[in-house]
Length: 111
Length: 112
Image 1 (tube, each protein chain N blue to C red):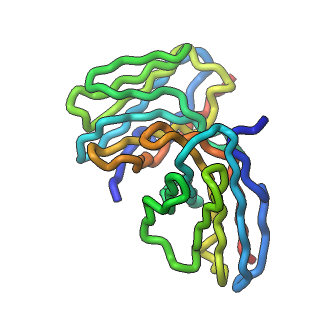
Image 2: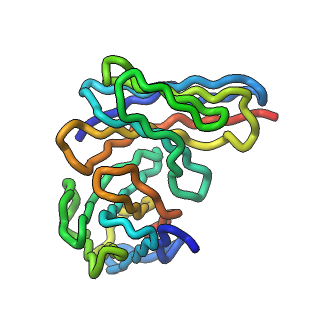
């Protein structure tokens, strides 16, 4: 009965690889987000989708490509992973303009 | 993007003590949120504030929307060990629809 669920929880991979993180919400929300939390715990928004349409696209390398197949899912694909991509990536969801509910994060480590 | 500064950056307190932390910005916000993040988990919403001067409580937690709309405050009374975590403020600028900016976080340690 998890509200916002992300998979995988841990991801350890080599530099240069391509990887995907998946997110699903069962709250009926119309908006979903990806955030990056760095080693200093700073939370920065990356993308936001409302009803499958991209509405926030912060300055993020184009190696990061979000995809929303439907309102309940938002996936994040990362190409050519770099050392600086190591972080915790959080998915969140909300009704548009309302406070966000977060998943438990995906811990990405690049070797 | 917007920078929200939280202070203090970290706090070490004895169980039973009260805690105060704040969040400031150079911009006016129309919504302030307070979240708590436990180790290994995502942030969880504690309190939402929508009006300047608003004071809202959630159990032992009380938060206020600053009258200038550029700051917000969170107080925790009679702290307990499970209050340990990182507390984040988040603000929403007027007319930006859906974008919230997060503060730098306050790490709280409660010593039993």
